[in-house]
Amino acid sequence: MNLDATKLSELDAFMAETAHKTNSHSYVIAVLHKAQQLFGYLPREAMDYIAHAMNIPTAHIWGVATFYHFFNLKPVGKHPVSVCMGTACYVKGAKLVLDAIKEELRITIGETTEDGIFTLQETRCIGACGLAPVMMVGDKIYGDITPKKAVKVLAQIRKETV
Ligand code: FES
Image (cartoon, rainbow, N blue to C red; front, top):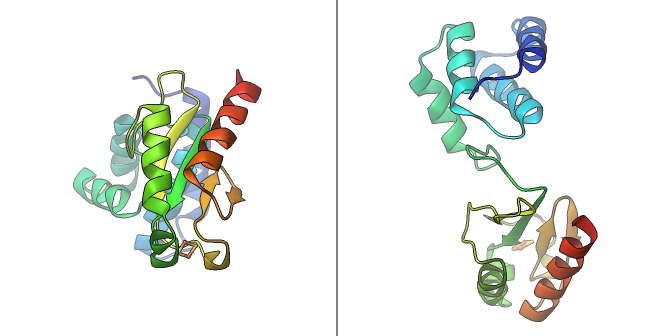
C-alpha cells in the first residue's frame, strides 16, 4: 500500500508541531491518533513511517498500537458497531445482543462486513450503565437494547447508507 503523500505531509507537520509538547509515550499515542484520523486506521506502512520519523523501533510503535483498543490495525467500516461487555451490560444480556449482531452481519469481533458498512467491536463500560445493555453505532448510544432491536437498528442504518 502506498500512503497518500498529502496525508503524510500532514502527519509530518503534526509530528513537528507536537514533538516538544508531550512526553515520549503520550507523544507516540498522539501521533498514532493523528495517523488513524488521516488514514482511517493504522496501516503497517504508516507505523513504519512513524517509527522511522521518530527514530523509535517499529516494535515499540506496534506495542502501543496493539495495546490500546481504540487503535484499528485493519480498515474499518463506515459505521463501527460496538456492544458494551461491561458487568452491568453483560448481566442484562449484552452477550445475546452481540451474538444476534454477529449472526445478522455474518462477522465476528474485529471484522468488517463485505460491503464495508459495519465493523464489529466490543467495548468495556462506557459509563452508561443505567441504560444497560448498551450498543453504540459510531458515537450514538442505543440503550436497553435487545437482540431484536439491535438487528432492526442495523438494518435501518444499512438501508440509509446504501
Ligand atoms: S457496563 Fe455497559 S455501560 Fe457500563
